[in-house]
Image (tube, rainbow, N blue to C red):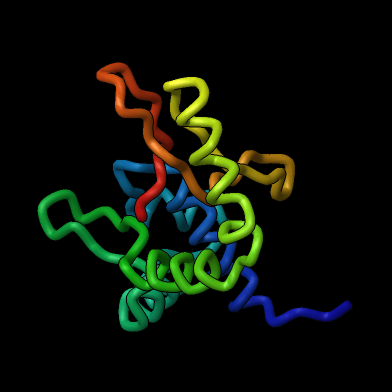
Length: 130
């Protein structure tokens, strides 16, 4: 199967940014992907122009941009599994007094789709944004 190399690289860059909460610089990304800094700068600028990456002017590092959240929210709201599971999650919370989480296995990793928080003081929360 053929692919567009620049697009594939851009998607891999997004995955790297997702793994680096403090962000990554142009030089570090260029070395990781074995491309020159000018090419990496152009890819990051394009990702920034479309909201998929942001440059922290203070650190000069790139992080994921708000468009990632917008796309994620759109995907999550279209998942019927969340709507179907919500009453069961609430029932679990009511029965146990503990938080209940809905997750799936995606590409070998846990992907949290929803949660119902416990009314108790001690809570476990996931690292995703609603």
